[in-house]
Image 1 (cartoon, rainbow over the protein chains, first blue to last red):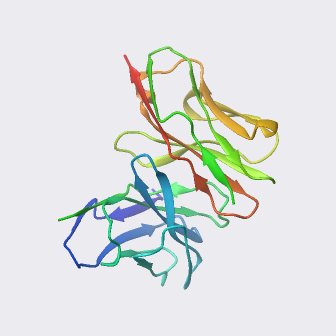
Image 2: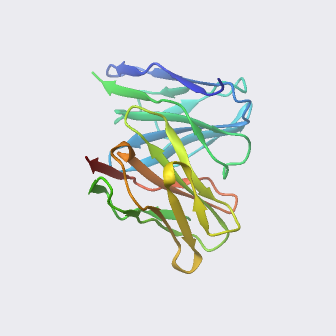
Length: 113
Length: 112
């Protein structure tokens, strides 16, 4: 089955620690996205990538970093500069353009110890 | 810049009641409109979408939405809800070649 996988399902971060969330897709989609979901705030775009080796900041990129070395992979690093990292993180992809239907992964819940 | 407003944050209905969730957007040009649904413990998934053509679009599980351009609205409807419709519903808009913007979501709770 084609789809998007995210790991881990739960992740705990200690003060001053960087953590990396994994996102892999086997849909052969060009574009990938990272969203942050907080209660009552909907989904907010962190970063997106429309092609390998290229990515753009979204609305709330501060304290996060990404890479896109392979078409199927788009890992997100939550750095120590992100002061409020506790949230549900969703990875998504589209075949090409940003305006198309998005396919989402199951999400990673990040908690701060 | 485009924006999306969902007026209902939490809706509680009894089974068989009719549902209408409001969604308004702001963008002056051509838009693509979406409703996504997040069932408890499941992936966020597409419920229905409007790109062009008939402004009344039908989606999965008996849901439909009507695009009213003059009102900048894309309300979601279902004539008779079931307990299995309990979920969080997100309206989203993509204007021109801009990225998709999501609304804040509406939590629907259906009481058996």
